[in-house]
Figure 1 (cartoon, rainbow, N blue to C red):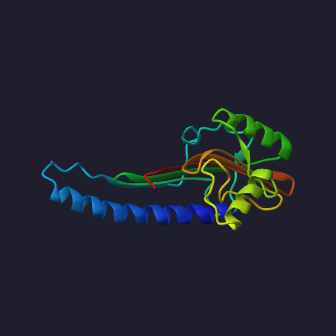
Figure 2 (cartoon, rainbow, N blue to C red):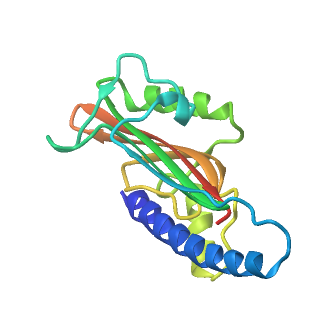
Figure 3 (cartoon, one colour):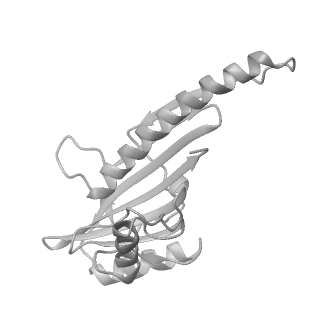
Length: 188
């Protein structure tokens, strides 16, 4: 899924910006006579995720899903560097229920956070994001942006470019594999 590549790029960019900004802030603080603020930094990488952190319920009867035998069904990645930070929480599941039924369940769950965008390939919101990009226009911070999926994948998003929840669902054989995700970017 192209979402993973974009998330990795966002993490790399955020870390670089954090390093540059912190160096600049340290120089500014050294020249001021005011006491310096405490600087904090941290890294959190875990092979599990709590659905409370994502803010979405588990689909009834769904089971954790792994793409490969050594794959993990969930993860939490976060870092903070002064005023900058990022937190990504992902859980993967599989169900033998109908794709439309699972999609409706998560559209309803996402709606509790605001208007739900259908960012599936070919959807009006995804086509608008693609058209904006091809025209060289700035991304709509409340639009699909770079979020999207394969032709037969459904992707739903709620939130802004820097703080959103996302559900992607894809039929695989007689099952539906789906990912629940929350991304928060701070100061980036």
